[in-house]
Image 1: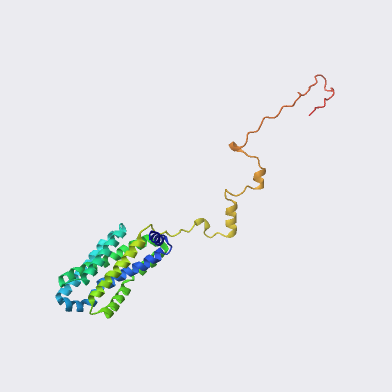
Image 2: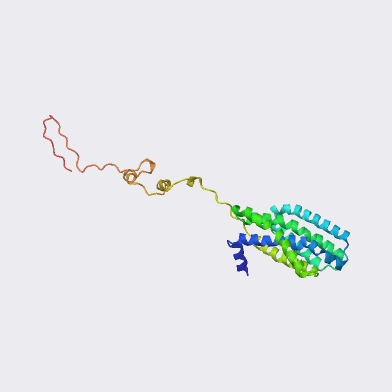
Length: 267
């Protein structure tokens, strides 16, 4: 199990998996948890006796909780995983609370709490994608992740068509989806930062093969030329030369006239 988790974190597919998981997490927190309230509201009113005025108060409180969650999510730049954990807990707890609510009061509190998870999830995912995905792919990844609201609303509509009038099963499905998608995002968000974009080398910009060949030949690691091998070393690195060797016999000198016979020197 530990090897499998480490493989997911270190795999090259980790940014793609994170984008898919982030898309699903946004879809669950926005569509299945927050926006599903309006789709399931008629059946909730019929079962729990929730009046129109109370339903309006719940909707207003849910919008306010969403805005407060977005403001708190501004701290995701410093602690993105912590904000993700809070978004996961509020989404799962709120959706499960609405599914298990015995009365209208409990349902109202759980619905407001669940709506705050959407405000927390979006800025946290922005920070996580910024850390994991490479620089040249971050803009596209951010656009894909934040487009999960539409698929989430479509999924909530399909659940309403299939499950209603059992609205409790719909909120329970939202809680399970939020738990799975949020846990996967937390798993993939654990680790180092993404690799930055590789800068273009100025020395290789616009060079040809001949220029690259000249650069390689003029490098200090290239082999010395024949002229450099024949040239004697100079400077302080030159090897010390030995003094000239004296001849075995001293040269014989003749005194007298200039017509003295020359003596043949022996080598």
